[in-house]
Image 1: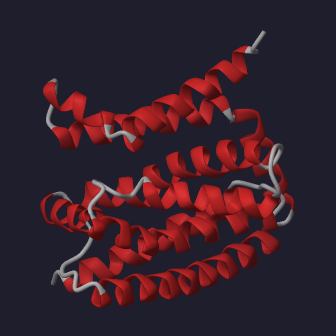
Image 2: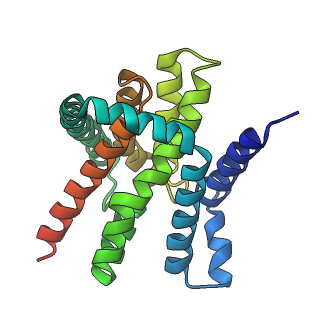
Length: 224
């Protein structure tokens, strides 16, 4: 029989998939404003995922406390690697967009910018802290960790990177597919960092937070 912990992990995976991959969070919009529904779902999943992984999270945090200098330089190196991957895949995405004659930007980026104009502090907190926690728990701590038990490391990294990119699509239009290419760079970078640092989730998590924070600083400056 499946243990209670594995049942909890399965529930977390199903919830994330239904709510974000299949956009099930829209169902909550019938009960409350869509913005509040999104924030509520992220908080609940962050708390639930952290509770499920609490033993590993505590253990990994204790490991970091013993090697603070290594962690600091590991995060900085990972952040620079993320920037490189983001620039490269963003360039490829933009070239494909121009080649196909597509205009504008992806819906995910557009939604972030519009929400930032309305609630800058709140969206910054969720995009730079809560969002990365939920995504890293799902994609790295759960999905990548378990895939590596069945598949090769590089195939697992590629699959998780693809899923990460696809979850940032809002429909199946060509423009969204091209936009997903840009997110593939980040998905691959976080997974590579996770594997390189012996599956310590705090490395990709802090890199993810730094990456999103940089994006929001640029967004804030451009909005002035």
